[in-house]
Length: 191
Image 1 (cartoon, rainbow, N blue to C red):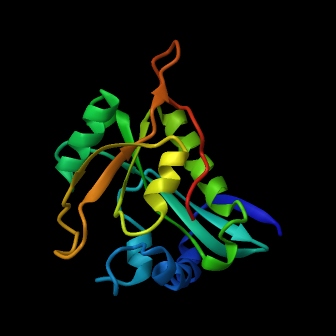
Image 2 (image 1 turned 90 degrees about the horizontal axis):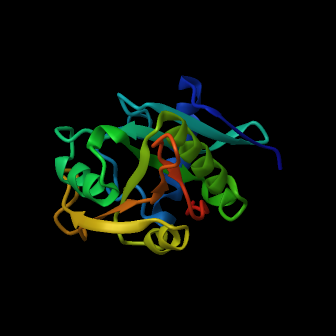
C-alpha cells in the first residue's frame, strides 16, 4: 500500500464524496443522514485554512481540513468552550474537521497520517487544536486515548433534535519558549 497525504484538489471531491457516504453508516459521521447538501459541498468548506486528501495507490480514500475559529463565527458556543479550555482567544485556535477515511482503509494508519498532517499545520500556524464530535460512535473514546480532553458540550445549529449534545474537545498544547502552541500527547486518530 502506497499512502500519500497531499493538499486536496477539486478533482478529488467526487471520489472523496463517495468515500464519505460509504463510511457514514459504520462511523456515524457525518451525523446527518442523508446530508442536506451534496457530499462534495460538505467536504469543500468555504474558508478552510487548509485541506488534505489521503491517497492509497493513487485513489482518494480520506480527508481532513483545518478551519478557523471565530468568537462570532458560525458556532460561538463551541468557540467559547474551546477558548476557555485552551485559555486562548478564539483567533489562536484551529478546528480539525471534515475528517474521515473510507471503510476499507480503517486500521491501516491513513487516519493517523491525516491527523498528524493537520496537527503539524496547526502548530506551524501557531493555532491550538480543537474539534467537536457527536458521541454516537467510538470516536470520543479514541480521541480521549489520543490525549484530547473534553471541555464541554453544546447543541450547534446543525444538530438534529434527536441527537445527543456535541462534545467540544481540545488537544492540550505545550507553548514552548516562543508561546507557539505545540500539540503534545498521542496523535492516533479515529478513522
